[in-house]
Each structure stands twice: as C-alpha cells, then as structure tokens.
Amino acid sequence: MSNILFIVQLPPPVHGASLMNKLVMARASQLPNNKCITISLNFSKSLSDLQRFKPRKILRAITVVFEIIGKIIKYKPDIVYFSMVPIGLVLIRDSFYLMLCKALSPKSKKIIHLHRPGMLQFYSQKPYLYRFYSFIFKNCEIVHLTPRLARLELSPLNLKKTKITVIPNSIIKTPEYERHEKDWSNILFLSNFLIHKGHYELVEAFAILSSKYPQLKLTLAGAFPSETEEQNLLERINQYGLNRTVEVVGPVYGPKRFELYSRAGIFVLPSKLEYFPLVILEAMSERCAVITSGKENLQDTFVDGKQLLFLESVDPYDISQKIERLIQSPQLTQSIANEGYKRFTEIQEESLLKIDKLFTCQ
Image (cartoon, rainbow, N blue to C red; front, side, top):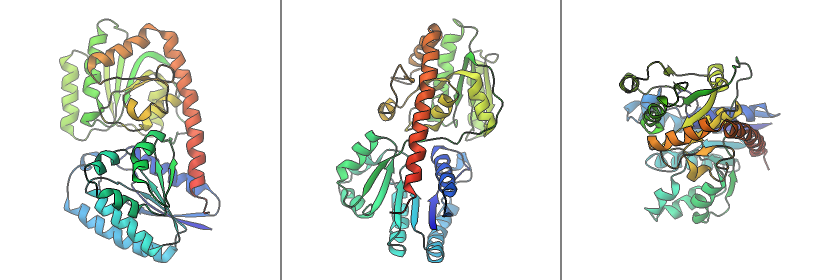
C-alpha cells in the first residue's frame, strides 16, 4: 500500500492546471494499492477571483501549513505530489510548503509538477535564485511540460540529485456525449474569456472573412471573469454586425464541451499567453483542424502545417489568413484534422504511461 499526498489546485475554477491535477489524481487512485490524500490549494473560488488579493487567501495559506503537518503525521506518505508555482511571490509560500514536506517526510518521494513556463526569465533577473532552486529541488523529481522547457528552464540550474521528467498534458474525455455531423464552416473558440486569450482578435478576424465567406459561423464558448467582460464582447460582435453568424454560449463543461468540438470543423486559439493548452488536445480528439498560438512552446510537440497551423502573431489579419488557408483547401483541412487526431492519441498514451510511472515507489 502506497500513501500519496496530493498538494494541488483542483476545479473549480476550471483551468489547465486544475484539470491536469484532477487527471493525475484520478490516474493515481486507479492504480492498485494506492491511497490518495488531498490538500487543496484552491485559494480562489471563481475565475474572477484568481488574480485578486483577498485576506481569506492569507488565512487559507496558513491553514494549509497545519493540514500538511497533520496529514503527514497521520498518513506518513510514501509519495508527495506538489503542483508548485516556482515564480513570483507565490514561490515564497510554495517553497515553505515543500521544505515542510521534506522536513516532516524525509524518506518520501517528492514530485514537483510545473504547469507553466516562466522560471528562466524569473531567475535570470535574480542570480541568487540559482542556489535557492538547487537547494529546494534537491532530491525531488520535477515534471515539466515539454523537452524545450525542461532544457531551457531547468538545465541552467545544474540541479544535483534531481530527476527531470517531461510529461505532456493530457485530457479527461467524457465517455458519453452526443456526437454531431462535422460542419467544416463552423469555427470554434473554447477557453476562459480572459483578455489575453485573443477572442476579440478572433472576432475581428471573423469580421474580415464573413463578407467573403457568408457560410462561416463562429461559436465562442467559455466562462467570463465578469459580466462586464461578457457585455463588452457582445457589444463588439454587434459593432461588426455579426449577431447572426457569431454565437456566444458561455461556460461549457463535461459532455457539452465535446459536443461543441464534434460539431466544429476548425478550432482557433489566438492566445497571447499559452503554454500547452488542453483545449487544443480536446479539439484534436474530435478531429478539428486546429489553429493556435504558442509556437515557441509547442513546436517540439507538433508539426506546423501537418498536425495544426501555428499563428505567427495574434493580429486579426494574420488570424484571418490562417483560417482562409483552411477554407480554400478542404483537403488540407481534413488532413490536419486527421493528423492532429493521430498526434493526440500518441501524446495521450505517452502522458498516461509516464503519469503511472511517477507513482511507483523505487
């Protein structure tokens, strides 16, 4: 019997890191002879709460300390899995949690899962952090998203007695949902409507295309951080006269997400800040032809022009050009959809096998 202590963010709110943590926990709990114990790092109750300072977050950070102490003493974990934020002010809090785990459970296996880049830029400006990271990560296994990020962000630290593992993101797919006939003129955007996700630029790109290709439809799905943001988007759509061809459906979860993917022919994510978005995997799993930003982080994982199309910029004109390339070449669109699906299945298999391997005590 292996006791595994998870110190993680879990939904809600729904975002890439919380969904990935949920998947990892589910996978570990399905393995034989594992008992999973959870400490929630959910300091925010909603999407709008994520970037805001509130006194209750400090109180929650303190109570987590006592939960770590209590659960390590009670369960004596064989493995500690920690979804850590290794940059910014949160580094102070999370480093304390990690050192507490090391002090109270010195013989357990420590797994640190990094869900986003940013370390290189952070420690390059603060040279003393090289030694600090070497200290806190010693005798840990660090999981990063891509080979490139592991090479750029972790190799310069010359970490001693530290194992580095690359595990691409993977998804939890709802087994039962209503599948629809593919509509190749239906373009889908599915993400939280945070300002950097590029939905305004996509609407402008769609406005450029709509007069030339009147058969096109755009579906915008996701949670809004506020009612004001929702109203601003609806006003923008109205300004362009796109009310009949653009549908805003709001947040979708579980089966509804995959119903939207199954119907859409093209999926577009023109985000200005993306690492390894789960939504492109979800779209590929339903054979959507994917157009996305994030080439810098994803080019080692996907082949541009074969498994997806990378945006060189998130300028509306550039977005419209990529979409038009698919509209004008149905054969290319179908090929990218099929090759993307194949790549998704490879990534999913690789990721799940590596996750299982994490939870075997050695």
